[in-house]
Image 1 (cartoon, rainbow, N blue to C red):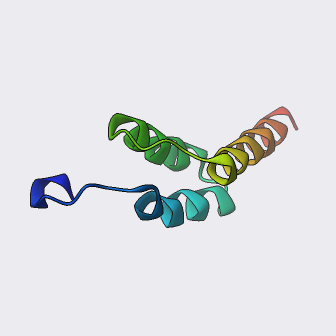
Image 2: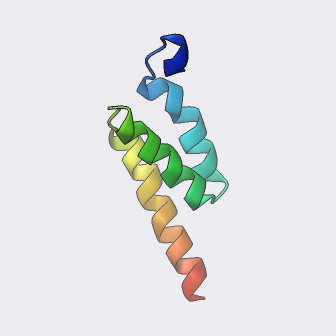
Length: 64
């Protein structure tokens, strides 16, 4: 997006982040989060909540 002069916004990342969280794809969700931070886009409460929920779900599965 940046290569074409488009500045990414939170609403650009949200669908990917929530989709990965919903499917339990932690690595991909954290990659989106890292990309957001690298581009100066800060997650809000709903995004942070989704990541926190995903983290707890992944941890539970690994410990079972």
